[in-house]
Image (tube, rainbow, N blue to C red; front, side, top):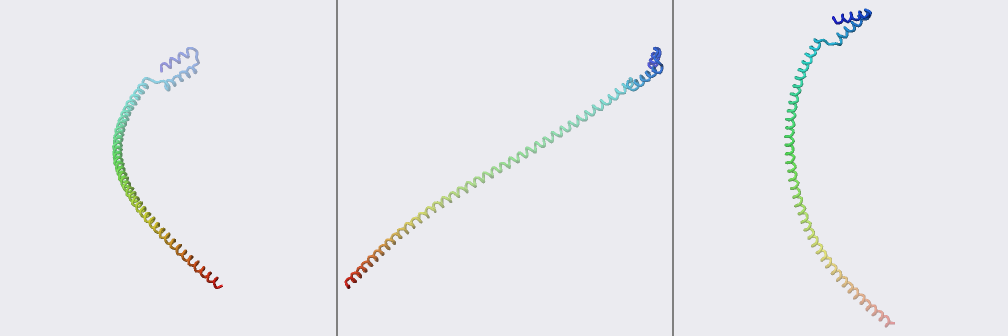
Length: 179
């Protein structure tokens, strides 16, 4: 405050009107109370900053602890998932191996079935060949019998025709003789 009175006296001594000097001093007083900080203001600010620093350190320590516990929980979760995955992988391998064995068994059964079918087909083929041979023999015997019967029929027709010619010539000669 003494500085403001000295400023006022200095302004009045250099012939600044009193009301203007008072306005300058009032403006200066307002600026000093509103804008400028005192030692006690700075000390209070320092105390607030120290308190904030301590609170921030404790918050950081708590966050660090939370982060460490989260990291440990995540590690245990990942380890559990890894074990589950290994168990699933082992189960899948055993399932695949069982399927492979079933497939091999089915393949062997299919091979034996195919072999049996081929044997049956070979047996059927042999039976069909023998049946065709018998049929061929029957056809040959039937053809030879048919040929013999045709020959016999031809001979019979020839004999009848010859007989009819002889009889008709006899009748013709007899008719001529009578005439």
